[in-house]
Figure 1 (cartoon, rainbow, N blue to C red):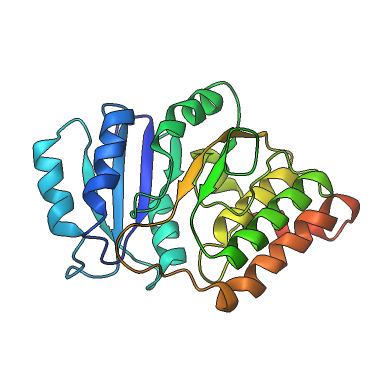
Figure 2: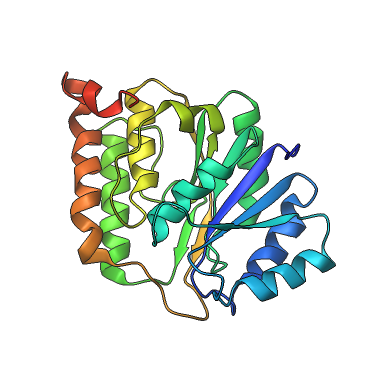
Length: 247
């Protein structure tokens, strides 16, 4: 049984070149407070060996490999991590060292103080995005800011996967995402429409320095648009209730 207050879900696919930097950052900022759930599709994933070697040298950061049980891919890995979590809070973090480890403690402080979901925000004051495809950055920023200003979401960055959740909220909201990393946007929109308390802290995202991204913009864009339009219109219509009602 995990008695730490935070589980960190990391979906991985051959991140052997990046995982040491990721785990080093986590150990430095939240060692002793958190456990890592390293969700993988295959035992042959090259992330596992360096991650377990790191765990042996850094007992302050427990690392538990978890086999993806819902099917291959990032979405199912995240869902598997949520299901495996036993802590009060749950954070989704990427294994490519792109997320802002220094933002985790401020996120944890907010959620301890009553927030249900805390977003790492690249597009609020103090946040920043370094690198990445310009078209992807443009779409992400436009979606985040329009959802904030027009849809009323209390975050400037609904599309970011780097989010911390109260675990009870993950059990109460149905998840209907079907591909990619859309689940973070779905949960943010549904949590807002259901009346949960959402906060954000500034975070800095930087593009990976090694390996190949598995983000497939054009394949997953229709999935994001589904939650984008729900976020824009949901509070003004009645049909959104069916979308947020737990299964």
